[in-house]
Length: 302
Ligand code: GDP
Ligand code: MG
Image (cartoon, rainbow, N blue to C red; front, side):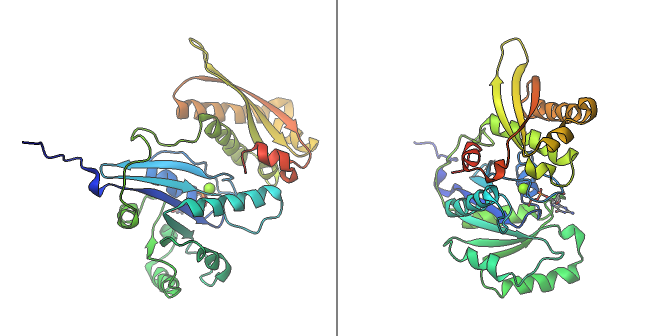
């Protein structure tokens, strides 16, 4: 007699889920909360995420491939244009779109943003995040308001930060994902290269350590990443700014500021890749890089 295969894949669900929405609504926080691992960088400042970040949530009978995206906005320069294009491409790849909003100062009549969703013929959920910040009385009318748009298959209030409502969200996601075989091996959490996460971790520290325009005028390029048997990995990274004055601010008096950034970034990188590293940071100036097409391509945008 043949053994009954308990691991039959007939009910296995797999698919791509794009998380989209305005800057700062908590998209990256949701991705990390669902994965129970910090993959995407998070900051209280808007527009921290500049690329789509892929994270894989593996379960017994499912593989949810989450795609975190940069915030939707009206682009002011080439980099932002590329970021918005990235969101659109990601939505095209998705089997399900999670449109995330905040309950506070969110505008349910934002026709433009929602109108753009109509172009994508896949199910869409409206995710109201940060419900830890509002009362139920405020939430219910808001949910009704979104319901009458008829755009969303589900309206799901959550708190990404407090991991509230996530089990329900996962089960609703599984209801709509296609059946199929896993796309990725079950033991990996992303297929984005280590290099990418290392540059993101450094960028995150720049968001945490510097104010105003600095983080936005900055990008990070990994120049060298060498695994050295018996020694620490060697990582050389350039912090690229737009003006010489910004270079001075990044470095700080006597190199103190960049030293602090380097220390925290190194610790976070070590935690992420699970090996000790030697992090060599340098600061370079590249005039108006955010408007420079070749630079934007170099940063991996197509
Ligand atoms: P993103 O730009 O949409 O990716 O937003 P982030 O994930 O970077 O989060 C922006 C800010 O909102 C951060 O300071 C988060 O800690 C905060 N945040 C995210 N989710 C929640 C939540 O559920 N509740 C509260 N109170 N804050 C949150
Ligand atoms: Mg983000």
